[in-house]
Image (tube, rainbow, N blue to C red; front, side, top):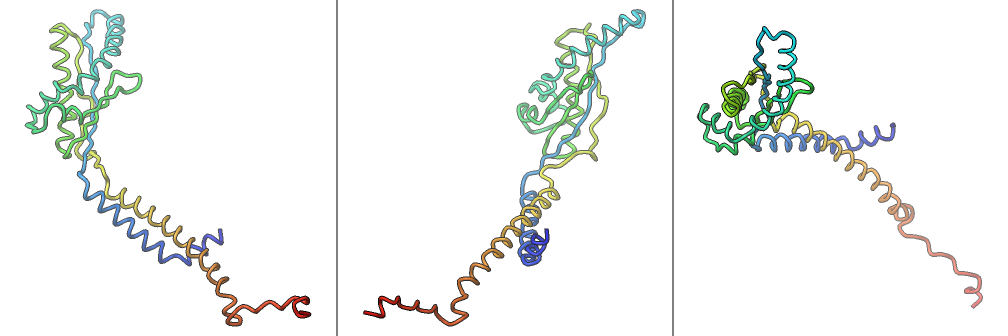
Length: 223
């Protein structure tokens, strides 16, 4: 540990400089990239139940909701629903492009669906995350018929304030600083190991100017 601290002190300039360069490079790279904003909402599968049916009706509703939840997943991400969202929100993208923004996953062991939308702006991402729920519910209901007892309701709307951005300038800059510091430590280590080698090569010159000539062997003197 002491050797590492000595190494850090000797190469402190390199570590600081490369850390700053890495942080700036990471921040510039994130700022230059096109940002993508991700919004999340949660939908809930509802089943109409006749109160007169009692517990058997609720048991049936639970079973239907469980199977219907998986059926909504491909509907939420379909180009058909995306087309309706485009018309409602006045978007300029194609249905295929908007459908690619949307991902839907089932919340474990529940009739709830988590929806995530990655779009070019915060407002669009949040609006699409909410809009797909109503259109998916209407489309599946229209296919199943008027007597279909299942619908999809928005349980937790997307919040613009909670929308996340990628790439994050802060995270990229922090990663750049970390990479620069590591590179600075490597450079400092290489310089520290190179100095003893240079000093050993320079030792004969420092002592006498040139290396001493070895003495002749006894046989050579006799000749």
